Length: 592
Image (cartoon, rainbow, N blue to C red; front, top):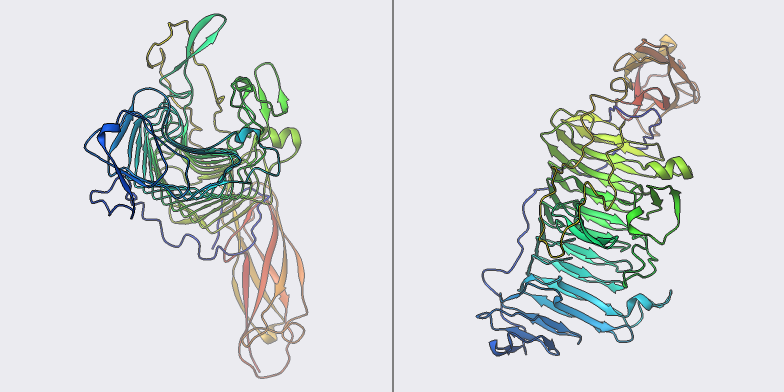
């Protein structure tokens, strides 16, 4: 059943099916180095502590002596190698990569596994990369590929930059049963052109507080060093990476959100790491994860309406002014299924096309929190391209003080909303307000400062802006139009099915209706029991809450069982379909 506080241009296309019939458990996945280690890989060789200060290049399966601390890290560029750290710690306070899995772009590298490692510090805890991938021409990006890397049962903490980095044109990587915590930048980063990664059963905690984060960072400008503060980074970035599966992970305490899907706009061309971003973040599945706290849970097309002016993007802008630069973002046909969101300000934000949001649960004690927000401002207003073909189905929300947690902004096209609940009651989708927007890099204050100054709090408090509580859909909840049940004796000549509004409307409500039946016993036959297919228009004046659909009966003088006929109410304007999917029923009682 569907009732709603939905917009008048609501598209209802059918029942919800079985999605979301039971809530996800929310249990934290088992992750990190296990207390009891499994046996080492057959044929693995022991690497002793005499090499603990040396950066070691591994060419065969190796397990470490865990009695010492390893301070220089490891490189793997040979296929079929397993690095089993046996719980050893790899730690460095400076830069570099704790573990690097890499190969030249003309050499294939397959089936490398890293397990049971504790990596702390470094620039990146672990990086999987193809040397020279930025120079690959279109059409050959996956030749001599790097595929089949498995990272499991490990712990990655306190990297200066990204924790675990899957670089461009890497295929079929797996990250599972691991902890990524306190990375200065994104916890796990799936770079443009990477594909088909599996991220499962991990914990991503407290990441993203250094890069553009509330601890501030230094930049050179006009011959001086300045400190600025930003919004921070997310637990998992899917940046122009496609066909990934993100399942049963726990996201908590990450600076800017849980999972952000977007396509890099070609930022910072003078950085030395720029390359042509050819791939969108399409066809990803985000399923059965738990998101605890924070500003954003899952954000699809995160940079669609973000001001990227400070990032010097090379992608063309379609909105440009002295203080604003907007480029298109690309993250289509993604699925967000059976996740749990707890105390997340904006559970799911959708700014690109073809997103499916099905069977999720949203819980919060704050009325300023919202479950789902659909819409994007600039692309809609400037290019006449609203968010299209979104499916919101079988979701449930219990957000204290917010009865209408599903919202659209700036218009939509082809929105399907069905089978959703708020506080146990069926509901739809309402017009909402644009959440406050910040630039990807923003400056609340800046002052000259000596280089090397450690991170520090900004001189004024930083509070993430929130949308604020909205008392109800514009001018109150939109009324539901619900056909009912009526009975008539065959000889009465007609059956009048009631059509009722849940509350008075302040405008005229119109809809169309058509008779329908089923070709089986117990259902009326068109042309024999009732007048052949009938249709018409319903109109309720402002303040009117009841009207009727009248269906003419045929007294066939035959003894038969009682029969049913359906009046289906569609094309509603000024209200939303309610009752049993817009269906009203007439029972025809035989009097022969």
